[in-house]
Image (cartoon, rainbow, N blue to C red; front, side, top):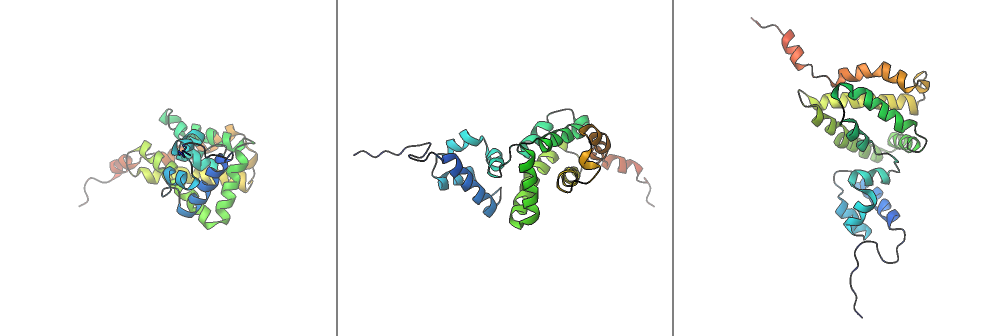
Amino acid sequence: MNKTSRRGRRPGSPNTHDVILETARRRFLAEGYHAVTLRSIAAEAGVDLALISYFFGSKKGLFGAALALAVNPAEVVAQVLEGDPKTLSQRALRAMLSVWDDPQSGPALLAMVRNAAQDEMFAELVKEVLEREIVDRIAAWLGGSHPRRRAAAFTAQMAGLMTARYLLRLEPMASMTPDEIVRHLAPSLRVALQDTSHANHRRAPRDQR
């Protein structure tokens, strides 16, 4: 009897999609986002690497699915960065509010924040993803002086909004409309992103004697 290896979906395993998710979730939590590769997940799950790409598209897509996120924050950031730099703050706020207010994607994101607050291992994983997929991406887009500090300040303000509006339900922030939030918070987000090194240099005295 000729036994040939089959690639792709494992024989007799109709739940391959769930097996991949379970494997990915366990590996991400145990080893972190950066250390885990799609190839290692495929090997442990017993599936072809191409099958993971077919189901989830990328490592970011798999991570979002493993955490039960209907929308992956890293992918939202990538879309937001494609527009006019002058209106980045407004776009970022509206995009974030859209996914968090959505009845399908919002609850999973809120659950992620709650889990991070209660589980140190989970919090470390979320922090790593935020730094690598959001802060670093924004910093690379910004350029200039101290881009990572500015990107981190921007991300921290966005995280503060999410915590106040969705986790703590702080009023009146929790009941404000997206337009009201953009009007109040976009200016401070723009300041966080600004490269002030040239302005500081102009204000410095020329003669230090």
